Amino acid sequence: MTEKKPNTRWKHKLHEILYEADTPSGKIFNITLFIVIIASIIFVMLESIESIDAKYHSFLDTAEWVITILFSFEYIARVITVKKPLKYIFSFFGIIDLLSTIPKYLSFIFIGSHSLVALRALRLLRVFRILKLARYIGESTNLTRAFRASRAKISVFILFVFILCIILGTIMYLIESDQDSGFTSIPRSVYWAIVTLTTVGYGDIAPVSALGQLISSFIMLMGYAILAVPTGIVSAEVVKMNRHNVHTNTQSCPYCMAENHRDDAEYCYNCGNQLNE
Image 1: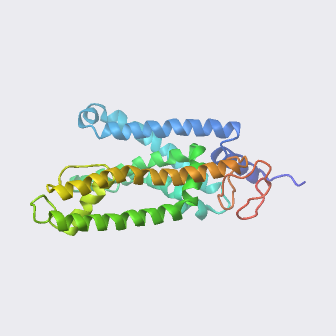
Image 2 (image 1 turned 120 degrees about the vertical axis):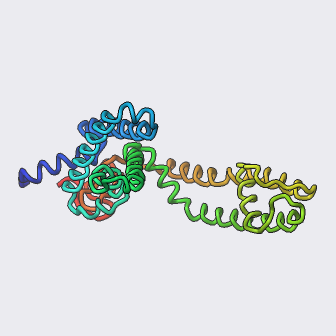
Image 3 (image 1 turned 60 degrees about the vertical axis):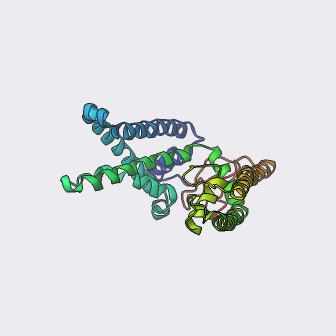
């Protein structure tokens, strides 16, 4: 077997640390990054409190710069360690990593009092870092698969609920439109049906006629049953997947970024390239 070139060796090692949480170095990196992300989110929240920001602005700003630089190095490292950098750059996590890093650098561009509002909005994009946490939670992969497997059923169910709300809203408009109870149009009545069916109940619109109250009581009771349906659909898919579950690891293909390969896999199930050259 030919020996790897030094350039290939360090890239492979770095790829193992960044993309494979099953390795000792990968675990240490993921735990460290997990802590940094949590700290960053806490700093963003504290910065939004005016009294705290006024007192600790310098500390929060310095901490945010340190975290931003760390995330920048992480982003660059992830790009250079994959065979197809554009695949990572335009992937979901690639876009999230970029959005959560650039706001601090954009503060150099938006300088001046007239740009403070735009700058404040851009800085809020740092909250996207919390989405990076999904990368380090193994069970999120199984949940994502269950949602994908049940998306057709859930889509049909949501469409059915939407049609039901239109029908119920129209009926309530016909009953309550002359009662001065807030049902002034069909769209507003449909809004009431959605709020009632989801058991939110803002109380800004309420039926006053006996028939309207009877129908609304039926809608409220029906809402509990309807909310349970998506949960049952996803739960059934999770159970089905666990039955036929094959143990996988966190190894990521350096070519196509596909994850969750079998423990005994030598080649990527998605693109067919060798996982460990």
